[in-house]
Length: 172
Image (cartoon, rainbow, N blue to C red; front, side, top):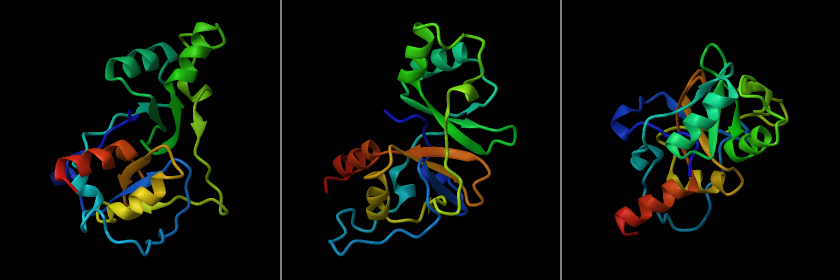
């Protein structure tokens, strides 16, 4: 299940984009295979609004919110709402149950940080990016964060499950 979600296509602004879990800020190569999504783009997925947490959120609250919403991964944001990384809920719960994570600990202590290096830049996927390119990206990443074009805040998340649901709804 996805860590966060993304607004419907009507809620996405033209400057919105996707940010990867393990990034490169490079255009994705399109495959030579036929377009199985018939020209559909990311905004056609009509994803739900985003859910992310501040880096200062206590572990107890993170676990509570994750299970209330049935999320497996949750993006973690800095004070300016920029993505810092994400938390794997199952691993966090294991640490809590074993006593290695205290309920009052900040989630930032347990998050997986996004790699931000020149050798591994973010891959941006805008709402106008083809679903073929999104699928290619998701073959090597758990999920993709939807952000504004400047990557200043998270709008939502896209997963392989979202692509599968789209295909089933459309009957492709």
